[in-house]
Amino acid sequence: SASDKGGWPSFMAKEITEQPDAVANTLRGRIAADETVMIPELDGLDDLFTGINRIVVVAAGTASYAGLVGKYALEKWARIPVEVELSHEFRYRDPVIDAQTLVVSISQSGETMDTLMAVKYARENGAKTLSICNTQGATIPRESDAVVYTHAGPEVAVASTKAFVAQITAIYLLALHVARVRGTVGTAELAGFTAELRAIPEKIVTVLEQTETITQLAHWMSDSRAILFLGRHVGFPIALEGALKLKELAYIHAEGFAAGELKHGPIALIEPGQPVFVVVPSPRGSSTLHSKVVSNIQEIRARGARVIAIAEAGDAAVLPFVDTVIHIPLAAPLFEPLLAVVPMQIFAMELANAKGLDVDQPRNLAKSVTVE
Ligand code: G6P
Image (tube, rainbow, N blue to C red; front, top):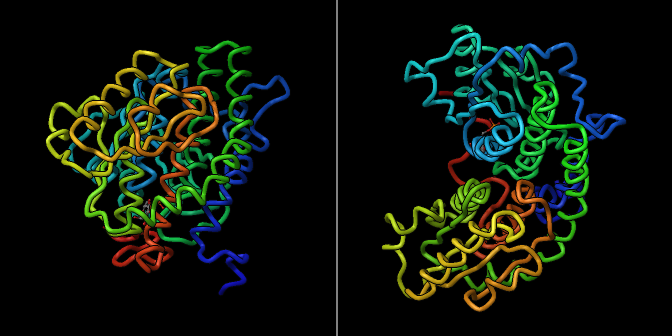
C-alpha cells in the first residue's frame, strides 16, 4: 500500500533514498574505540582469516557486483588473492578449493538457491565459509561458519539498490577487519579508512540532491534503444551494475564494459548519438587511470557518442568532452562506488517511470530466486 511506501511513489524510490541509512546502519557497532574495524560477529574467529591463502566470493546478480567491488578492497588492504565468481558457475566447474580457502557468499535474501548450493558445495569440499546477508536467520547464513549481516532493512523492490550499498559497506568492513587481524594495514591507516566510511552517508545525501537533474536526463533519453556504461578499477563493477539496473527496470539493452577494453571491441558499437555513461575515476587517486579514462571519453566523443560522465566534483578535465556531467562528492578512490552507483539507480528508475513501467515489479523477475 501507499502508506508502506512512506509517501514515495514506489518502494524503489523509497529504498534509493534510504541508502544513507543503509550504510550508517551497516557500520554501526563495528568501529572500535581506536577507530579500527572490529566486527563483533567475528569475535574468536580469527582463524577464518589467518589460516587461508585465498578468498573466493560467490554471488548472483547485483550481489556479485558488490563482490567485484570488494575484491579491490580485500586485495589492497588484506593482501589475499580474491576471485569473484557467479555462484551458479562456481559449483559446476570442479573448483580448486580446500581448508585454506575462505568462500564468502553475498546475498540480500540469503535464500538464492544458486548461492546456497555454492556454499554447501564449498563446505562439503573443506573450505571455510562466511556469509554477507541482509536477512536475519536466512538459510545461507545458517549454512555458513560465520555471518556479517548488512543492515539495509527490508528491501521490497525486486531490483536491488540499498542492499547493494550495504553489501559494499559490509565487504569493506570485512576487508578492514581481515587487514587488522592479518596485520597488513597499520592502526593509523585503518582509522583513516573508517573515517572515510563514516563520511559516506552524508555524501550519498549530496548525490540524492541531484535527483531532478538525473530525472530530466532520463526523460530526454527515454527512447534510447541501447545505452553503454564504461568504468575502470572499482568503476568497472559499477558500470556493470548501472547496465543491469537499466535492463531490469527499463527493459533497455545495456552493457557495461571495462574502459580499457574499449579499443578491443566495444568502440565498434559507437555511432552518432549513442549514449554512453562513463564512471570517471578520481584524479586524486591514480592520475594515470584518470587521464586514460578521459582519453576514452575523447575517443568515443570523436565518433559521435553522447557522453554522460559521473565524475568527482571539481574534475574540470572531463568538462570539455561530455554532454552531461553528474558530480559526486570527493571520497578516497576505493570508496567512490558507494557514490557513483546512486545516479545510475535513479537514472534507471526514472527512465522506467518515463516509460510508464512498474519499477517495483519488473516483468519476468523475482526478488529472490529460490530455484536453480
Ligand atoms: C534476483 C534479484 C536481484 C538480486 C539477485 C540476487 O535476481 O532480482 O535483484 O541481485 O536475485 O539476490 P540475493 O538475494 O542473493 O542477493
